[in-house]
Image 1 (cartoon, rainbow, N blue to C red):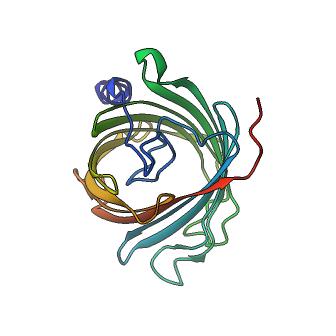
Image 2 (image 1 turned 120 degrees about the horizontal axis):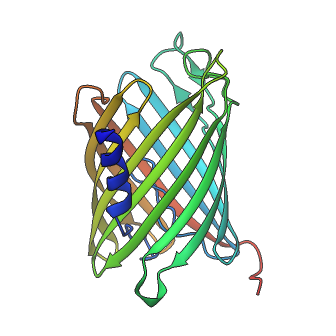
Length: 257
């Protein structure tokens, strides 16, 4: 119970978000599954890319398209073009497809934090094989709060995961919370650090992670990111190398009023 309360505390006390290449609250990928506290602008189309690697064990790439559908609403579609579990025998191929819907319930005006709610479904479309595809769908409910303070900012994200288990009618419940801090050193460069926790109540497993990295804006619309995540206890993975990008393509749909 104490571990679960610690998790909820981590998710609730955070009240800010890392600024993107434009200094706004968008969906920039970071080390862990940080969703941010904002949405893509209405009618705007945005691409995200992420590649994470546990060298010699696992490589996963994600390409996500986000579209602003209306004031405060965003729809996202993500695919995993390449997923490897370390060897051809363990499984290599394309990963799962995810569909997400996000709503910004607070836009940061009147001194209140930015805030979003998001739901996501991960569909079992992978052809990696039994070592990397369990053939079950997963459901996620995520919330983030955020507020920037000059060149500094923080982010707080809580995620509830309901994960399908192969060959069983039950669901595996997973709690994930992230606190991240960022500083913009230059208009084109920022650094960030994260502390996260993953807790599985059924097996009483709790994993702690920490890490840091940076983002560099190569154009006004494209930012590149790189980071390293380290496991902080025995139940966490040793380390993870992450590369990502965000590209704001532009307006795809007319603005609706």
